[in-house]
Amino acid sequence: MSWKEKALWLEKITKRMLLTVGVLGVVVIYGGFFFLMVSGRSVALIPWFFLLSPWICIYFGLSQTQQIKVLHWFVKKVKK
Image: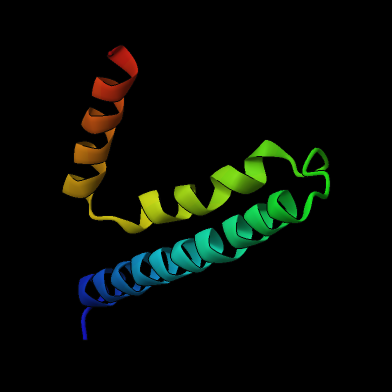
């Protein structure tokens, strides 16, 4: 296995791991967040970046073309 093949394999595994961690993070963090909201407890102590961090993992786990499509979608939504 050449150096390039090893690098591509490592990139592929890393992207899959980022997607997995991101999806699990969305489920766990947002599940806990909504549980706290429904149970009437304060969610004021949860920093905003905890809610954003799983989406960052998901974004970097996507392929480059998918990342570009997400950016175009986001810009279109913000400009409305």
